[in-house]
Image (cartoon, rainbow, N blue to C red):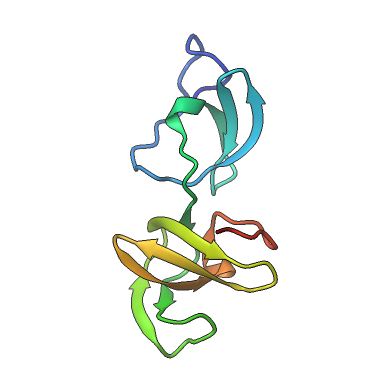
Length: 122
């Protein structure tokens, strides 16, 4: 991540994990200003970003469940910092379907960072 748009500007930080979620907050030519889950912002070349939606687990250890709206059918426990793919979120529904290293299940929107409050993701 650079301090501004352009290859000539200094690198501020390096993300080493593939699929780390970021929010695009501005665009300039081929660069995108992004914000991460900690609220830190910087510029990344658009070729370094993917259209696939990802998320990062925040807070405490979270339970991934087999079904939405079910806290009993636990598939796995995931720790803060775990990154996965966001598969589906329905507007007005608090549960989202996720995939973490091939394991599919459901988390509540409060369990992770990577989707807006009422956003729908298919």
